[in-house]
Length: 330
Image: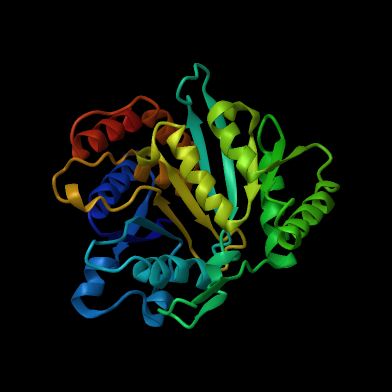
């Protein structure tokens, strides 16, 4: 039976790179049906639609969502991010953000291979806070970090389960427990308690500032990393930078309980300056599609796609897509 995929090409280079990802999936022999959804900054400028509840209900019926990129210079920052991306994360309960990093860090010689698990529905991103006396010299701004035992535990447990499937079986918690005494304590206590259920997994803890140094200087120390929403957002961009560039980074926004569709997207932005010029490298979108196939149980095809992406492609967007599709098909 074909996998039913919702495709949100989005803005800028998004439609181009998702088209190449779909081409490669089909070249790998996976049977999919796709439905296009016109969402993003350009759609918002046309008629004000960001993500209506009706459209969200439509998306719930799909097996997965493949997203290209969203955002246009004409739309103020935060409008599409909160109204589309965060709404999907919260409403579809995409509580795990999973990003793999394989590469050689600048100045290094040996490849690293680690995964960051980021809690995806709590922390500062829920919008707790507000402004008082806005626009005056006495303005006050507060921004809370919302953490629940339920949300923290299910994220940590997912990270332990992932570590169990990997050769090293090692998991590092990253936080800032020496300063963030309340949320940090919740994360550390939960981590320590869940760890007792996984004696096969070795564990470690790093403050987030130390982890930033180690990501650059010694990424080989990591196997699986688990952290909160904000720290994960920052660390995964750094992970991309030391693994070949953010333009090659893939990501999965997962609902492991499968009560709704999971969403897969490249980490790069919409790059409006090269939109429609057939210049964008689609590799990150193709690798995100491989993560989607993993989730759908098509692991052989996913591994073949990753192997086909290991050697850098050159040329236009379609050239790179054709090259990877040909490798997968052989």
